[in-house]
Image 1 (cartoon, rainbow, N blue to C red):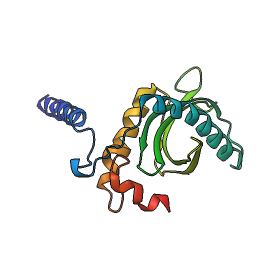
Image 2 (cartoon, rainbow, N blue to C red):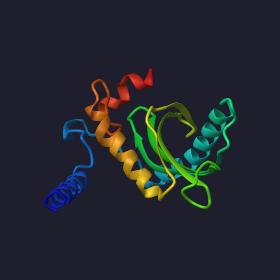
Image 3 (cartoon, one colour):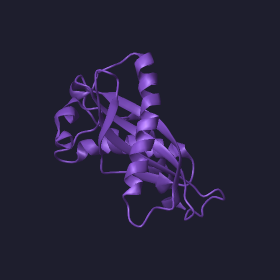
Length: 175
């Protein structure tokens, strides 16, 4: 019983710490680039279509063909550099017949993409970053896991930066 109490206290402490520390990026390197709300909302709409097309085009090249069907895209967060580079966290909602955890066979997949925005506000996906997260449960878990990976954990990997770190915009992912 004492062991269970210790584990419970440690878990609660871990939850409190994770809620307080939203990023491992130090204040000195924290990305402070901002855009207007109008630009952000407009880019969100554009990116929903661009990301859906990107995912659809990458799925068509897979052999064998995937049985999963893309239902919708949610743009979770967009980060901007000072020179038209964009990093975004997205969540896709898919119908996947192999998902047995829920009756609707719904699966949520979250990932991070990097893109370039030109002067005409056209956005082109450059690459997909390595780590994704999936669940057949609630999509809030995906958002939390994405933020944990790309705002905290990437900063602990040598030679990598969180996507809210100014050094990220000049890192190897853009080459």
